[in-house]
Amino acid sequence: MIKIATDSVANLPADVVQTFGIAVIPTYVSFGGETLRDGVDITPAQFYQRLAASAQLPVTTQPSVDDFEQFYRRLLEENPGATILSLHLSRLFSGIIASAEQAAARLPQADIRIFDTRSVSLGQGLMAREAAAMAEAGASIETILQRLEAMRDGMQFYAAMDTLDYLAKGGRIGRAARLLGTLLDMKPVITIRDGAVDAHSRQRSRARALEALRSLPLEAARGKSGLHLAVMHAACEEEARALAEDLRTTLKPQVFLFGEMGPALGTYTGPGAIAVAWYAP
Image (cartoon, rainbow, N blue to C red):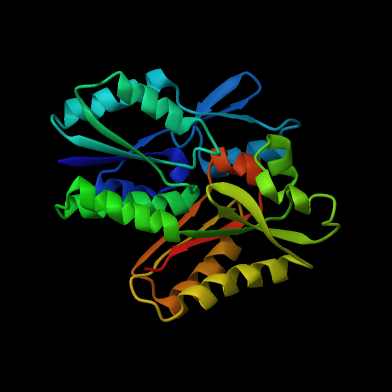
């Protein structure tokens, strides 16, 4: 048996988690002295309300090594003899993978595989869902890992941002820093390249930024079979759903996910961000 695990940064919809039995370890977000578990103690909607009212940027924290050890022990108790395939956001964004690896080392008798998706949010989520679907269908761990490596190499992720201020304040801006100081009233579109945030373009308005976000998957994936597509947002559901329905109708993906970015990502995007991720074999 293969048990798929991921972290809450994947932003997987609850029905996908339940349908495929994916185990999710929560990350933490702290407002002042109050620490909350993503998806357990605070919902995305509650988070963005507090973010808007907070004078200071909240602090996000990865699960500790002890958290991961307890998480893995519980999965092994519930699924004796299982291989655990633990998929997580890019190592360049967080120490989550380091915590997972240290916890796995404490359980040498267990078969725990750690996989760096080099992505985030539903880019990561698409890979976790695919791994779970393959495990449910009886695929071997080697076959699943080969598929995940192909998805990781081909995964595209772009986000239209209202501002880069949150990324800059949070220290996660990476190569997109070259856009700072040149934006004026422009809206940035960023991407994830080699597991890190990078700049894509500057658009003159939000409408143009969203049109750029729409055109990217249309140009890259139109007519391709086996498409995996996801749309995610930060407190702007109506705009995101309109984009999602447009892309879904035009591209007819084999797999489609829609969700809201939680605290671990929303702290750095701020409200108003919309992202698209896709993998076209």
